[in-house]
Image 1: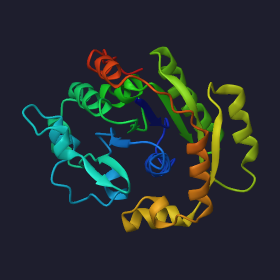
Image 2: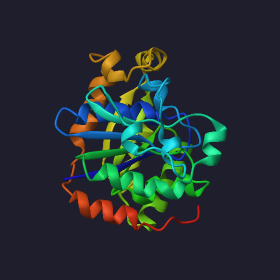
Image 3: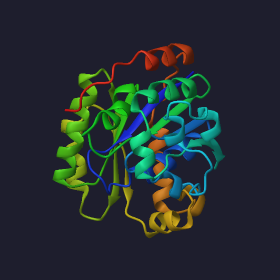
Amino acid sequence: MVEAFAVASGKGGTGKTTSTLALGMALADSYDVTVVDADTGMANLLFHAGLSDADATLHDVLVEGGPSVEAATYERFGMSVVPCGTSLAAFERADPDRLRDVVADLASDTDVLLLDSPATLGSKAAVLPVVLADRAIVVLQPTVPALSDGLKVQEYALSYGTDIAGVLFNKVHDGDDGVAQQADRYFEGPTLAEVPDADAARAARSAGEPLLAYAPESAAAETFRQAADALDVRAGDGEAVADRFQSAVIPDPP
């Protein structure tokens, strides 16, 4: 079985990578989870996962004649993690078209595939994770502009047949409830959780650890677990999903 989720936001600064790793760790209690940093232009998952000194990254895999994806896959915190590098030169050499084959390879041997997606939809490399995924998890801060950005992601996802698994509100403060409650009116999926803003999340990044490893008893960590529990992971045929990824047409950005 396998289901691929694009973790997307529509804007930067929402805590998308923190959310991706937190959901991955929580889901890893029940599933074989693989996390991929598909944000090839502005990657930072490697810092969150303590992989800043990784020998091979997704950038290397996306270059013609580069190593296999297995060489860039690391076992961390109960998950398989595929980080991406931060070099501009490596980004320019990488071929986003090859991401289809990479995701197909990974999909054939995991239960849950989480694609940490770029914050904007301004290039083919940015939109591809949303197009490849079975469903998207939209990560938002509880503000009206964030809702607007998230709706753009939803519209684009649905136009390519990617369903919405749910909305995850992050960095929530007291008094923000009104905005979060509006999500049910506009988004296809349910609100998975409202994660409180937490100093622990920022400290975890500085420590090079996911939040659930650094501060497992924190309120934010517990809320991420609740969000993972709210996801109804669906069993897909790994080979069929891999075939779909390999034949996916890369669209032009909106």
